[in-house]
Amino acid sequence: MDHLEPYFDAPRQFYLDSQRLIRSCTKPTREEYISMTQAVAIGFLVMGFIGYIVKLVHIPINNVIVGA
Image (cartoon, rainbow, N blue to C red; front, side, top):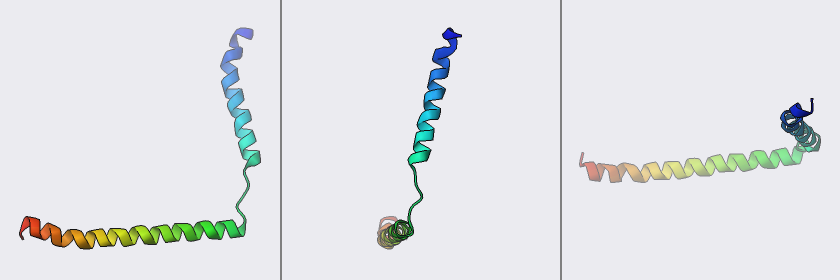
């Protein structure tokens, strides 16, 4: 069975690393969750505003280039 040992080392190490990761992970507290949610909401708003401005500028430029 010693010749099969190298084939079982990688999955065993992966399993041990995965178990260590699961044990070290914790759920966010309420304050952490709220701050993450606020950051994501602000990011959505900023990106939406930037997209709106780009579209607002793009339409007149496109009309000038196409000439329609």
